[in-house]
Every structure is written in C-alpha cells, then in structure tokens.
Image (cartoon, rainbow, N blue to C red; front, top):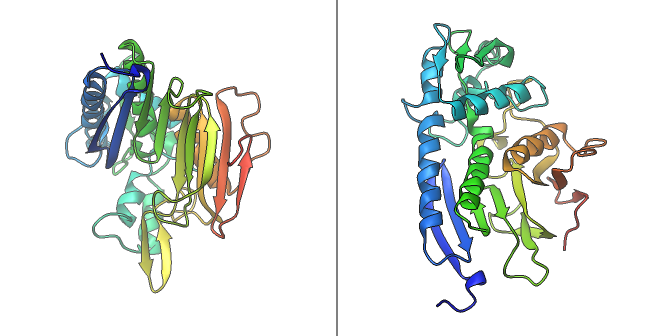
Length: 311
C-alpha cells in the first residue's frame, strides 16, 4: 500500500514533437498511464510531422498541385480545423510551410531571404487554395509547392487526446507538459483548495524564469512567444513567428502571451489570436465559457492580465 496514494506521482520525460515532453499522473500505482501517453504521442507524430519525408501530412504536401490525398479521420479533422481557423486571417495559417522553410529560423541554414523569394512564397500560402472533401476524407493542395504545417496546432490537439486517454483509463489527475503547452487534468491533489499553481514564463528571461503565478482550476495553459528562436543579423533579431500577411516576422511590442482555456487546441489558437493582435482584443472570450483568461507580456517587461490574477 502506498501512503498518500492520491498525491503519489509518476513522472516520465522524453523528446518528441520537437520538444521535451514531461508527463505526470497522480493517484496511480504504476506507470501505464504515462507509457501509453508516449505511445499515443508517437502515433500522432508519425502521422502529422513535416520534419520527416514520410507522414500523412507529407503525403498531402508531396501531392500539391497534382491530386487529393486521403488520410485518417483524426488527421483529416485536425487539418479541417486548422484550415477553418486559417481562413479567419487573424495570423494563424496552417499553409505557411513554404515561408517557414524559406526563413528556417531555429533550424540549420537560417537566413534573411530576399523580397522576391518572400513574394513568391506568399502566392502559395493561401488556405482558400486547400480543397477538403468530407466524404472522401481527402485533402488537395491546389497549387504546386504548397505545404501544410500543423506545428501551430498539433501539440494542443495531442494534449487533449492524452487527457481523453487518461480519463478512459480512470486517471483523474495529472499534468501534460508538451513544452509551451501544458494541460492540467482534474484537480490538484497537492493543494488544499485543489487548484493548480501555474508559473507564467517571463519571455525576457531564460526558460523557467517567471513573472509570477496564476492559481486556477483544471485548464490548459498555452504560451506563444518570440523569445526562444530567432536569427540575429547585423545586430537585428528576426524571431520565428512569421506573419503570413506580410511574409516577415511579426512586428509587435509583445514578447509573449499565455492563455488559460479548457481545451489545449483552443489555447493554441487563442494565444496566437492575441499575439498577432498585439494586445488585448475587445470582448475577447466574452460568451465563451471555455476561455478563462490570459497574461500578455511586453518586450519592455510590463504585462497586462485578462480575467486572471498574478500572485
């Protein structure tokens, strides 16, 4: 018998999805929950990655301008969601792959492209040029050279699926940390009020340095920021968040946005909505009970909060 079983934690870390993954379950007597979660992550990565030559998404990209490609229902549903939000034109664009590969910020070969090359790529990053067929579960990129990149939404989707898995396994409490994307499952067994304490990353400092904490119930905390990956040329920094409306890194006074929401996939999208807006959006989250609040941090170190408090 394990003393204080409700607080007994099982931890497992590993590398996947281009980041360090940390999974924690509470109240379990074995590591089956974290092990099965890592298997699930691997399954999704195999289907969704664009960093290998073969995956369901890469099959779509390879067939751009040629033919539609049928994919599994999970991959199709995620792509459909990504396209729907991309067409809202607030900054998130899942067809931005050609621009990301042109800049390569955060990867070997990062460079400052010339204007002509950027303009050429701008012609093939239009989400309206993606044809979806619900009956066939097929995706057709209508122009040669187009590429889907689900990197801005996939981690949120996968975190939500791990939560589904844990609930199906009877795991009532845990932490899913996919690097910049954290999902708290159930109530915290380590605090009397059963709330979680979430540190908000200070984007002007190294990873792990916070501006303070937010005390909150079950939620996903998702961060978008410009502080970790950038290219510096002649003293000027070019961060990795490319604005699909201009082809260049987003011009903003913000350094980072952390949102608190019910579902992690929504967190991915809403963090980007605020980030691309450059600040608070009037009536943001009003009428949506799945959005709990946000912290916006500026390059000068100041910050503002929406419906949450820093402690």
